[in-house]
Image 1: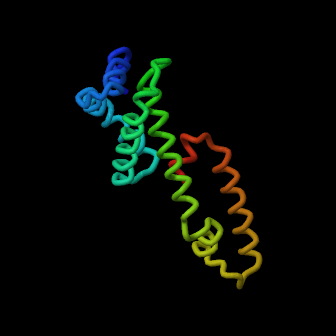
Image 2: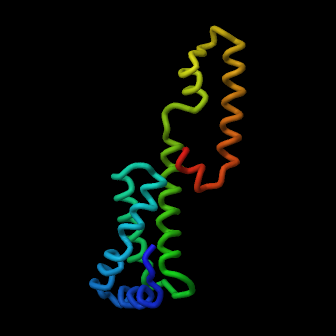
Image 3: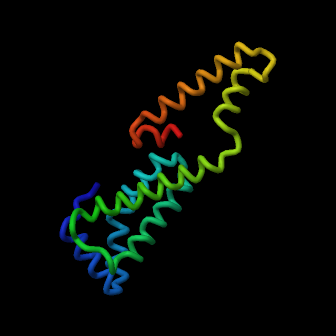
Length: 143
């Protein structure tokens, strides 16, 4: 993350006053690392571009409410990562195939072998439990 400090806070004040050049400078300084942070989570270049654009749209809209209480980069990072996480949650909800259906398909358990189906179900529960126990930074890329 590039250092910003007071310079970023001053730029945000200028953006709040309607200075388009100040906003362009903020984007120039921070766009690349925001994109890489989001890309690491969503694992999709196109979606990462869209979410990066949305993050800066939110920065622009919130410029009047921004107060320099901490690091601008931390604030921007929080916006971007929340967008990425929300995107993953939405994508997960809209998935067509459940994890258990996928496991059954991969293991070839279509109900014809009860013991294999029972073992697959146990494995499925173990995998879900293990994934849920991971910290967000590790769980979201897996999902």
